[in-house]
Amino acid sequence: MSHQPPADQPRTFHVKSFGCQMNVYDGERMAELMAAQGLTATQDAAAADLVVLNTCHIREKATEKVYSDIGRLRKDAAAQGRARPMIAVAGCVAQAEGAEIVARAKVDVVVGPQAYHNLPDLVARAAAGVPALDTDMPTASKFGQLPARRRVGPSAFLTVQEGCDKFCTYCVVPYTRGAEISRPFEAIVDEAKALVDAGAREITLLGQNVNAWTDEGRGLHDLIRAIDRINGIARIRYTTSHPNDMTQGLIDAHRDVETLMPFLHLPVQAGSDRVLRAMNRSHTRDSYLRLIDRIRTARPDIALSGDFIVGFPGETEADFAETLSLVDTVAHAQAFSFKYSPRPGTPAATMADQVPAAVMDDRLQRLQAALNRDQHAFNAASIGRRCTVLIERKGKLPGQMLGKSPWLQSVHLLTDAAIGDLVEVEVTSAGPNSLGAVERLRQVA
Ligand code: 5AD
Ligand code: SF4
Image (cartoon, rainbow, N blue to C red):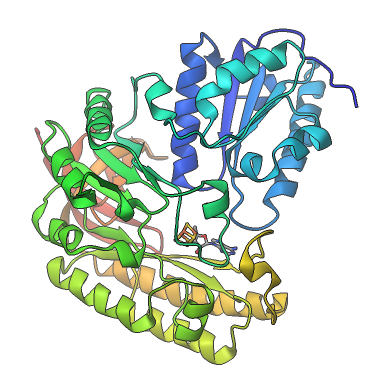
């Protein structure tokens, strides 16, 4: 099939990211990369010369969604009387599908998560009329080849680790993101300093298995302690963690490091040992609960978050009841829950006893009811608490600003504080998804 060459080198671009925070980070870095090439960012995707779809492959019909997005984009552009935009598919669908996307949707560029530093090159090749594909996973890191960070909001992401060696039987990540790789200590600390210089007060360290980060014997807690020493940093967070990589050093950091926020996203996925074994999670219900006890001893007010999958192949009603009872025991501050979605190429996709959709729907509803109950209770228990809020944006009402509590709750308050300020507040009301507060003190820090 012939490929229609885009008329010219693109001058404007739009990056659209789906899925996890690591994709958001990658999307920001791709945008910085294109801006450094002299391209201008636009808000309206259909009006851009180049659209980067930074895709996610973790669940559902992700691939089909990408194809329908491409179709819609071309229709919208045509409705504006424009020639079709150049389209680059990036992210995990690009990695998983590769040349198939060029064949099927005639996109211009396909670039995997480990190769996007080559985007300008690929775009130039595509502009010359040849579809360009790069899904290599080079050993040399892309990070050293990206432009420096310049302007960021008060809360910034920083990828420190990528990939996963755990091979949970339902998960595509080890295939799309590759083996676990940690960025070097110095490079991360330098980027953290640059982020603070560029306006960040809070940094969230990212990795598919962020607490497996390591460099020359150092662990994530060493990195956290180094970032804590940067002048101007107010808050540190990290996500996502695996229970088996939750070291004593990291638990101690939650006790000792004031800027490390009392929030932990620690997915457990299921409450039944039989299911955990079939998932190849390599922890048990009991080892997880004992770990939670140790973490709560170190940091009693910690807000726990997690991920759950219902309807994993072979999950019985009795197995599911164990998930509900684990939820009752832990009382999460918030959590994400998903219906199991067979991912092509993963071991679980071909396991016997796939659970019918109606059963999954029912279990998801019951699980979410329990998680919502706990989230609301956690928020309600915050009323009367004094805490800091990092102001992130304007609210809907005049004079209203929105920010986050240390426990990652959204907080709205009336204040003349600016974006990036830390204010001390007293929480006065709680809803299922946010808190209301009144200002008590402006921090001059
Ligand atoms: N089906 C449903 N949920 C999944 N997750 C990962 N793979 C699947 C799948 N095949 C969920 C897990 C993981 C989160 C990022 O996505 O709960 O922690
Ligand atoms: Fe996927 Fe398991 Fe690795 Fe998490 S730990 S990314 S769920 S394989």
